[in-house]
Image (cartoon, rainbow over all chains, first blue to last red; front, side, top):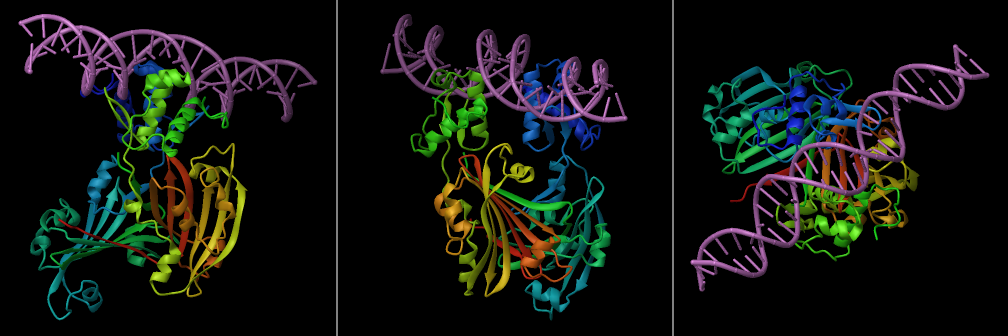
Length: 242
Length: 242
DNA sequence: ATAGGTTTCCTGTATATACAGGTTTCGGCT
DNA sequence: AGCCGAAACCTGTATATACAGGAAACCTAT
């Protein structure tokens, strides 16, 4: 029977949930057939118009693909990030209904090289900075390598957080007030290290998002976020409000 | 009576066009009431379910606002201010104090391929679209390949403008009110054509900006903007005021 | 065996009907 | 006057029904 909790929700929404649940649980894989409208009528005892609305809306939302005369299928997911917002990757993945996990490659205090010092607008004379290298995974697949430097002055506790539990972005957003963000998007062929970490095929470029954040006029963190261009793009939509 | 041309279009689409036309002509101003479902039934001799679908979709597209028990209203128009990201490349280059020039490779009316039709959200049955391919140059160096398709219905005069004098973005910004913009940034290895046009070295990826623009709920133009990743990146800075 | 027509299943559209529930207006009663 | 309930509209949801048209499988005749 259909979702018994959420009993207030309209019927077409319950049908949508019924399909979504099957997709999330892996019962329906990408490109596989989803029940036809008439099958839903029989299975869920709803009218075809209600089943039609559920499938139509899911298709409009990009989760399903419909072909007249053929059937309805689970759409291929194309991973998309948001260009403008400073988002937490774990949340983004979970909002897509997928499972998030990560591998912490390193998390340590390092001495400044002049290149990094320059990027961080710090005098290279001084202090050490924190550095972490994390591979973020979506449903077990390599999604993003996060290569991040953090100003130890601005976030002294950063070195002691558990990156398995809290992503750097989540920690920094919660603990350091953000005043300015700079995003640079670029493309490049991956270094051997990045290529290995992301398990990339040959001759595939990276889409790289460089993010620098400031608080109180001082740079807090520099992050280089590497993605395989094969499966990643950044999208933003701007609409009139209503 | 309803739109007599476009007689192939489904009825709910004609109802949408009927409303859109009134908005475009200024007959329906922002925040004013649009005909209720029952009024549309009487005026256009369609069933309420069809009127309902038309209004529901227009609301979903952001052009109308619906309030249960009250009515349906034209949404607030948001001016170009929020859509500032859409820039004219000629201006950008000149603002950097460099000289702008371009090469118009092609500028013609073409028949729709199904891939482009899909991208443009148009039925591939019908109409032709305009296509132009331009190489934008900064100080004589290849900067960007602009591969653009324009909906002939939305901007019929596009085919006759002089692209040497006016860039597509400049023309469209000035002549078609912009309601929605979608940007997607991706990376890929260049095709042979693009590589030649941009005079790119071997093994260098492209940074590609795909821009789709809508007006009155209809797609106006799709542009693929190719840049050599060797010499190009996209940057934005967000400052928080409070 | 193959070409061509038929059947079957699917989505897409259109309509009439029904009821629920929110909002506003209007009129009557106190 | 002020309160309150009834009406009049509105959108939102749900169903049954109908036909069109695309796609694929199947079957038949040559």
